Every structure is written in C-alpha cells, then in structure tokens.
Amino acid sequence: MNKIILKGRLTNNVNVKYAENDNHTALAMWNMAVDDRSWKEEGSYHTDYIPCFAAGKTAEIADANLCKGKEVLLYGKMQSGSYINRDGKKIYTLQMRVEEIEFCGKKSESRMPYEEEFMNMPDYPDDELPFR
Image 1 (cartoon, rainbow, N blue to C red):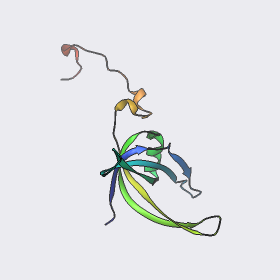
Image 2 (cartoon, one colour):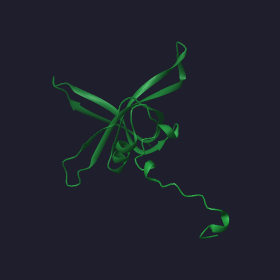
Image 3 (tube, rainbow, N blue to C red):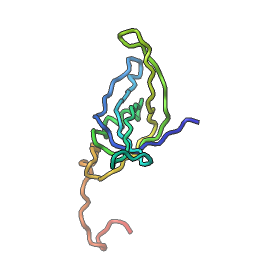
Image 4 (cartoon, one colour):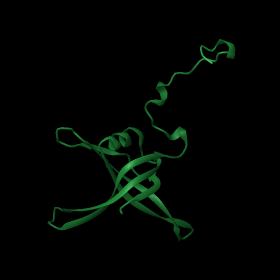
C-alpha cells in the first residue's frame, strides 16, 4: 500500500502547466517544508523538503488556493521516476502525488477567490423572517 499524509507549509508558489492533450490537463508543482518532530537538531526540529505535484482538478484547486507559506495537509502517495539530464546521466526522483488537499492555519491566510463574493445577510427581527 502506498499512502502518505503530510502537513507543512509551501516553500514556493504553485507552478502550473497544461498538458498538450485534448483535455489540456493541469499539472501543478510545488515544494513543501515538513517538520520531523521525532528528530531534533540543535534546538530545532529537522525539516524535510518534499516535492509535490497534482494533476487535473486537484491541480486547479492548488493553483487557485495555495501560495508560499500556506499551511496544508496533503493526502496522496509517493511516486518515483527518472529522467536523463543534460549530461546524459540518469537522475532518479521521488515526489508526492497529491490526491487531496485540506487547508489549515488561520482563515486570514486564505486566498480563496470566492470568499469576497458572499453577500452579507441583513439582520431581521425573528418575527419578520420569511420562513420558520
């Protein structure tokens, strides 16, 4: 079973690209700093920096709502890969494929685009409510 849960903060803004296929699938990439509370180093916790990516709708959600410094809880799996660099050497990679995003931290840190669109409901006395 390959399942991972990470909680941390983005170290950079989300970088989004669109595939050149019929669906123009979104692909989002970012890095996350995750404290390892079991390993203390000179008075502070050890921090791992994990490369993350998401595809499709999850990538679009990440692009619209995540930014550098944002605290999130991510659910997904680890995915390995490889590529040939400019020198012809094979480079192996390990990154998190994000399947779900849960937002953490203060609401004031949010970049949610729809928050400003909510209308304020007027205050009605209880006897003037159109329903009960």
